[in-house]
Amino acid sequence: MPPEPPPPAPRRRLRLSIGAGVVLALVVLSAAVGFGILRGQAAPVDSLPLSEAGATPGPTGELYVHVLGAVARPGLYVLDLDARLVDAVAAAGGTTDDADLTAVNLARVLADGEQIIVPTVGATADASGATAPGDDRIDLNTADQAALETLPRIGPALAERIITWRDENGRFASVDDLLAVPGIGEKLLAGIREAVRV
Image 1 (cartoon, helix red, strand yellow):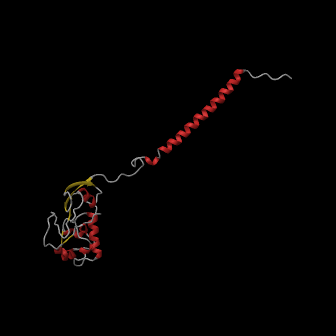
Image 2 (cartoon, rainbow, N blue to C red):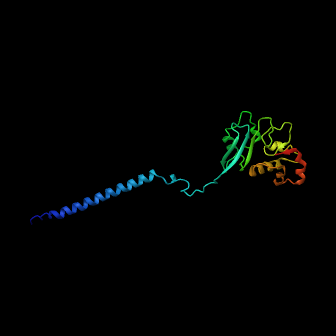
Image 3 (cartoon, rainbow, N blue to C red):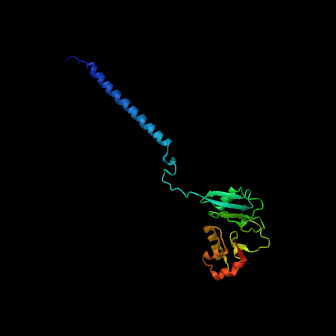
């Protein structure tokens, strides 16, 4: 039997073209997938800004505080709403060498319009920042727990409540503000009124 003649040339070329096209399409597709994977690794999702990632923004705004006493640059400062006393002292250039840091609570949250007085060691400052010689009354805005416990009928629990109220509400504007502290009534206030000041 004579050998079969080879297929016509155009048909063979068509098969080769289809095969080459399929191989080329697979190469392009593989390259595109590989590039997409690399691109995904280069830009992780957690690199989005917090606002885009659904984070809740904190409080916005500002408050004004007047910093006096043993600080490098006394004056009026504008701080964030969630600022603490340490932020006000830092804004005023930090404390001087003779500052009495045991008389202030650096962790206390500030209130708008507040006046902060950082006393010097051994000095007692009044609301204007001036030293009050011979005044041995307890300052409700700067006294620590031990100092408050020296007052008549003020034990550790009440002293702690006074400090907690001060931390949560800001400075005492008057001695009468003590009535807002749980456990302090008119009678107890009358007994300590002459021994405290703001």
